[in-house]
Amino acid sequence: MTSRSLSLPEARRVALAAQGFADRPHAVPTLRTLDRTLRRVGLLQVDSVNVFARAHLMPLYSRMGPYDPELLRRAASGPRRRLVEYWAHVQAFMPVELWPHMQHRRDHYRARRGKWGISVDSDLVPRVLAAVAADGPLTARDLDAELGAARTREHWGWNWSEARKVLDFLFMVGDVAIEGRTPSFEVRYDLPERVLPAAVLALSTPSQEEAERELVRRACVHHGVATVATLADHHRMSVAATRRAVASLVEAGEVSEVQVQGWSRPGFLHREARLPRRVVATALLSPFDPVVWHRERALELFDFHYRIEIYTPAAQRVHGYYVLPFLLGDRIVARVDLKADRARRVLVVAGAFAEAYAPAETAEQLAVELVRAARWVGCERVEVRPHGDLAQPLAAATAVLGAGG
Image (cartoon, rainbow, N blue to C red; front, side, top):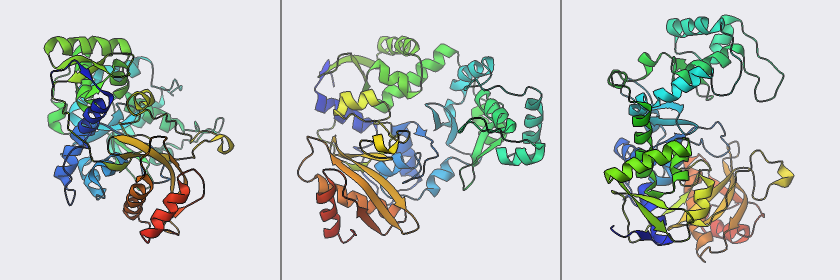
């Protein structure tokens, strides 16, 4: 692509191809499929909400189709792990080779005593670190029992034990790393040398400028074409640092400035970005999918205004509690409020809403995807409740598939 301008449909296709939606699907997803997908998405945001499926599992499903989550567990564990958790976007799985590139971030958190500004018991820090060194991997609950720590109850959502506060501080500064999680999603902490591959720990530490340049370079690859604001959001960097890194990449010829139809600010196109003639995609997207996690980009690229309403009082929600966008072709054409009722083995669609530009086949295509997604999360049928302008045709379409009820 040599043009200095892109139409909006072209920009969407570049972005979706960069994120893996133009890759040929594998009949049965394997570790090779997973590796390819991880190279596209870059990061997998981690979130504890499990109304439908865990946040870090969903981007892989959106691109790979029904896959065995054991593939991800294998990629994120053991001495040859490919992924490790860190505060890379927010809490996220990132490629292990980025560990040295986060050293400046760890230094920053050490200087400010963590990320939340929660006071940490300095006397407890060496005791917690010694306990992890002696008995890790350990959860905060394990340490509470070992140290006799008690949880505070002053503020809902912040009732961490003192051991949990110290563990979070040690994690943010890199003195401990996340070895994995329990079946109930509790974090298991251990020493970095017992979590990360030795080859990664042996890598030299880049300067902050070098690290930021690499982080922005990767963001350019993962987004294909993006504004500075979107590139900054990918690894949660400052706009100023991102702009400096982009200028360096432009000078090196790795990215070029482009004008995208309807964008008020310039876009930056990676030199290896693909522009497919079309994107054939049918996918539910997590609220934490890289395609939509920067809400400004979702609006600029897809004309899709999106806000997650988990923390909005129920009476004030517009679309629902856990709403997933539906990608069809190169447009986000609908959104559905989903809940996996695991006791009844039913995928509940509490609300279904079409965008103004949604094509006539939206309900039928969405029904097929919902049936597939239901099976992936262990549900046997789809129950569409009468809320939203797409609910009635969607209910009829799932009934035709023999999965409604």
